Image (tube, rainbow over all chains, first blue to last red; front, side, top):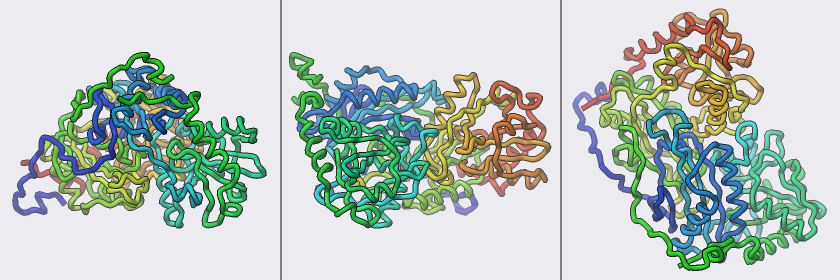
Length: 320
Length: 320
């Protein structure tokens, strides 16, 4: 029913405001957009940006720990690789992006930060529907470091549930392009909450384990590590686990990981820039092995954090 | 290499600005957010909103033609259905949303408008990673009406290419939840541009035709219409074609449509709120039948626009 039919009498139209009054709160941090360094409350994109309307965007996140970036080069490699695959261009090279990230962190003052670089398709200045006519938009921001697992969960291991949601397959979206297509992961997370778990793993299109919201997964059986090979983000922390295994002489392989294999593992852990290497001790309500954090997981966690002081992988932020 | 190592001398940090100076242009229109009616330049979301970072959002678009909404009730049904599936809540019921959409259009003054209602997961006020703690955010906006096909393409038919990209399958994302997960469609569109076409169709996970960027597809063979049944958005314009076919006595069915069947059809057209029923006359460089717009397509196009004056489907906007 139309309003004119419903109302019976004329209702005045609401007032039009010039400028948005923002009632929301934002974390302490610094963003870069349109050449400007700004507080996080100003880090916004238009709802008409195809980065929002079509999730037509790529990004990468790197962390700062004890005042140093960790493996920044690998994150820059992946980000620029994604830009090329999506045919996006930005007016900065690797050194330029690196400088912007450094500036965001330095201006924020954070010694432990979660730092994101991103590029959206943008929009066409003539409002056409052709993405080739869009002006791509680069942004970056630094906010306080966050972790998938909180302090208690890191101590006793995460409780995860395996959802039957299927991770978006590579034939649809190349997972090497780090992207914001997360509704499968979000719905898997709600499945996990419904079953009393703290986070989720979802499946690949063959019914094997794929990954969770923002993390890869590893299992250990008889001293050998494995992690899903296909249809998953090639995570930098996942790669770091392979590098650490090579140093320690642990056997590690990317391969199919069935649900049964994961549940029958000696140890399980997840990996993410948001938290590093994090133990899993309960899957679908059942303890993994004896339900305690395993020896290999503990060893890798310790090594991972030690490496944050190694100049080969850590680059100091120049704070004022 | 770190900046401090690279620089050799101290480079001052860039200045921090209080407020973003926006260099971009926006279409003429009105948005609603946080209880405020605003020009489109103010319609922005935080980069930290999970609607952006996780594309965790649903939406619907309805159009206004000759000053009336077309089939608004069906769009509201789908939008509220998506909210429920994603477990989002907004502080407005159907009448409340309808009133906001009316106000956006009336304040814009547009007699032909593209009107979107959307809800993002929002963000947690405590900056937790738990989506259950997020405050969901409703927005709406009205901008000038746009069409997938321009005037010339409507006259002579669109030229499309079939990409081998696979539409995100329902096991990953329920297509009945209208969503912004479009990277598969965007990459298909670039495939089409590379082959000299104007827009794209992509495949379902069985290799049949699925849909294109923002539209469903129909073909006509021996007087019978068919449109892909699975893994596609249940479009309102697609449904309107079924309704018109019922009135006209045309046989129409949702069924698998192979690439060969599409290329061998007598007529092909696409359907979208952004443009209605739009003819396709060339697929992968080859004319469909005689390359002219077919009789059934033309009949349905005419009926579709006639229905915009029918009070059963059209609800007038109350302009000031």
